[in-house]
Image (cartoon, rainbow, N blue to C red; front, side):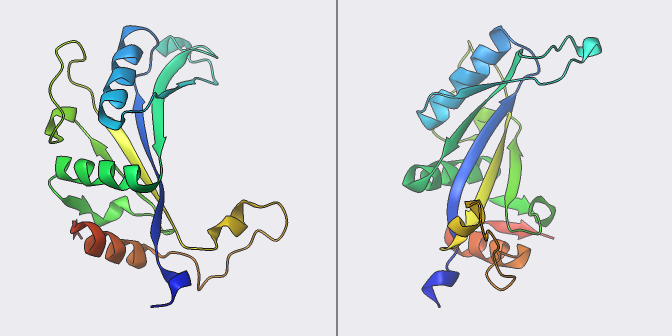
Length: 168
């Protein structure tokens, strides 16, 4: 296989949206720190939604982005939390995919914490090939259609690298 055609994991992003600031947000942040070992970034709302009690600048979620070997290790753990199965509809046409963990106690090696309770979170995985840096630059940021990652390529990569069963 051509070395420039090899697919790799660029990053995984864990996002726990709680919808309100305060105690729930602190618990979600503690959960993400327990799973990844990194300090989560708190994200805030941009809009005002009076019926939900949300105003601009209010912290409503937290997230962690992982890259490299650490990302692969955590992703292996998270796949065990969904029993090694993903529906094919979780993959987009650019080869990226995301899935949700409904309860963190499904993940092996993560112990239940009474203070945190039961919280779920989302996992988004971004895949890339060598040369994808081109799309982040300002001028001539075009990637050819042969070099883009297609949905089928991503499914094949995940099946072979992680042994995941992708259900149609």
